[in-house]
Length: 121
Image (cartoon, rainbow, N blue to C red; front, side, top):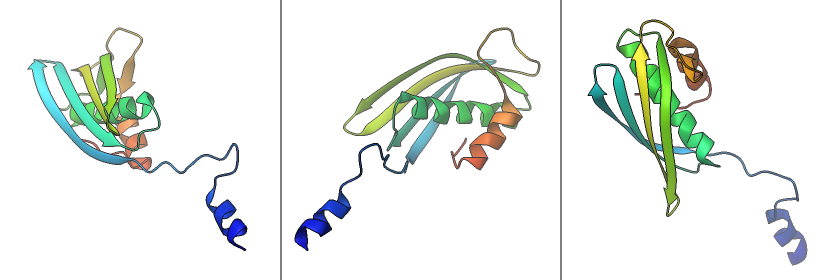
């Protein structure tokens, strides 16, 4: 009986643990008129992409709050220390679709973030 109890606690091979992020905060810094830095912190990220998504949600909401419809991703640096993930992202915000490959439609991203439970500014 004890062997059955122990085996029930072990994840089956190929099974993935549920994603339970703890979004620990967003700090926003205006660097210049349309250039904004977002510092995000979270626990429970599966990989750097989760942290990047959190920063993108912050940038999208910031753009919407400021009356802009778009943002362009410039860079994101991500690191993890002691289980705490940190993201340092820079975006430009603009009223019209900016040039570049890494542009986002702020309202669409805000909607996706809300649907996925990712907090924003």
